[in-house]
Length: 182
Image 1 (spheres, helix red, strand yellow):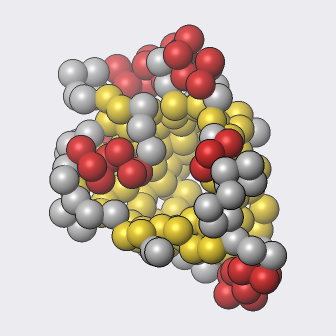
Image 2 (spheres, rainbow, N blue to C red; image 1 turned 135 degrees about the vertical axis):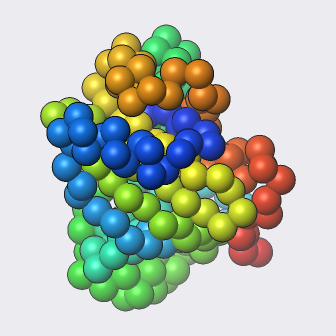
């Protein structure tokens, strides 16, 4: 699947939730999301990050998922959105899966936890994320940049700062340390 999204910073969470619900969006999730990222150590030829990819294990409520993503820089530039190929697969036991990754040479590189409230409406997904020390923000995902921007207007967020970054740059933006492992 091709994921296309933007982040909108420093939103009023309660006001946005009310707006989404008034527009007919349905709540699809509320809870803690715990992400742990893995990569191969030191070998750039195989390193996921050096090849514009990432490998993540996610605990989303009671659901366990592994995800592989690949950045799509051309689409990002053309549509002014964050674009990635994304493959997600549910797994039954995240700890066992992590041990398999480590057995094949991958190492835990970073980790983060957030509280998320998610809504969906037609082809759109709205994730309101809260990290400790970072103001609430919205990730809005849709079929293309134009549709995403139309929804930015519908939810009254046109004047807000928009980012095409991942979480590491978001943390850096707020001068918050990101949890890395050596």
